[in-house]
Image (cartoon, rainbow, N blue to C red; front, side):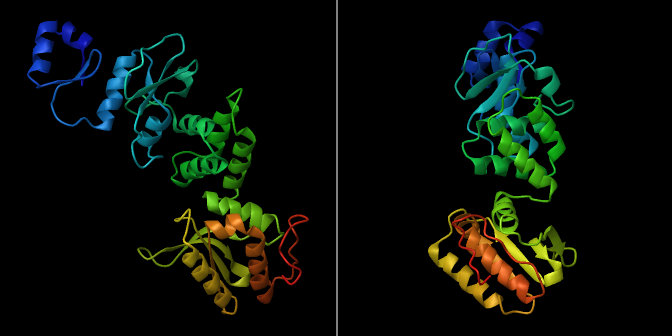
Length: 303
């Protein structure tokens, strides 16, 4: 990838550049930016081209920086580039330009191509998130993948004079410090466990030998009970929900039960989940008493 300015500085003429394009040996990616090859253009090359086109101080940001850092698994449809606020860049197809007065302090010191720091990238995406669950997913994923820490995210959020979802962001980061690592686990922690006065379980423990480790979301060690949270299916089928509920009913009488809950159970019926977990824990030695989360709680006195 090379710019017209670089080529002219090497003594090549504009006519020579046009000849390469006409012969289809090169491709024009953006005005004044070319690829010295034919064929498909990778997203990473498009990113470099957009940064080159945008000029001095520009860097990858938002979804593009998130993909470069490993926060997103697939490249986004557009290339996102942030430009110093004192300049304006002509919009181009396939590129979304953003503007900032803080580029010097948010740029990652070593990563290439130039890009925003991961904590700043996450908060940029939080600002644009459509739902609360999207916010939770972004923050927990960034920490779960060990791309950044809750303290760095809190620092980045604190630097914004205005931030949409600020209170939620603060709450989620506090939960992450407590061990929460997924949107579903956060719902369980807040609306099942904590809201109903259940004992606090150990978070995200691995068991088994190397190569055959199993991931346990919540473990109540003293009461020989495991809770596995399955967030893989955001909209599981009714038959799967029914199978899961039936398995949990059977598990209540087991010596060391494993209760499994999906998104619909935890999000749609946290009181019922809390009631079942409370019953299992009390049968195995918990002497506490679950409490209703509110006047309409369906926890049930029998829990």
